[in-house]
Length: 316
Image 1: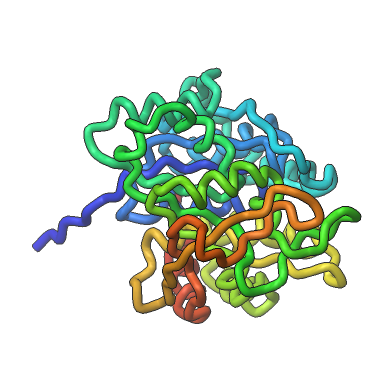
Image 2: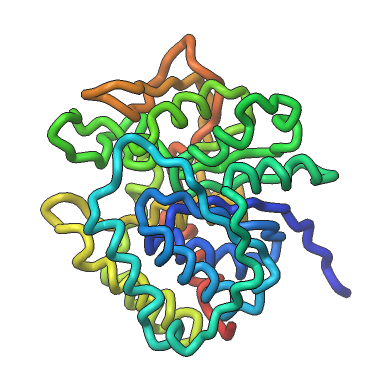
């Protein structure tokens, strides 16, 4: 007997980092996901590199009919140039170099307009998965409150609620997470928007470091998909100095939330706000007067890793 799977229609907005590209690969392999479009925010990437890698992954997975757009809105706090340049390695790997990416699904429409158009023409509400800043969504819904009902849920990798942030800048106190810090106004808007929002903050992702044990498990899968994913992750080993902080499965956990069984993580609901000025720009904090949202407070790390390994395996 064939078991039907209810597929969740998703707009994926990422910002081109290695974790984002891995999330795209994971998303394409989740049977419950119907990916209707991919947006690129020019945050933790140089957009040309992010676009090339995105198109190659879609072509490699036989999904080159999914439209891809690039945003033209920027935040006031740029990511370090070295971080933005580092993902170029992804489309320089042999498996990616052998792929001649399809270009016909790339549109010159700005990402915020693309999101607006998809929501306007959709007969059913959509999920918006964001592994970069909330900028494109903010501009998409700006002055278009009628479209709020077209958003089923926003799942966002962003914020640090009860743990230290990962921003280390001269004018910052370290309380913020980078996606929230890149565009603090967009972060504040999202929390106050009234949309159904699920944050995946550092509180949860801190349980999932990309360590050697995990990479060994992935290598043991020994398939074309796992090998490419392992090569992507291997490029992160020296990307962030260990004396600063470790590379975690920030975006991967956020993507996994769309498929993980609910018993594998704890979800909390409360009212949050975000600071928009230094030295706490992008800080997400509990506030009785804030917007009501939910967030992933903790995760069963072993089950989350098992989910990722299961899906990042096999043939393309």
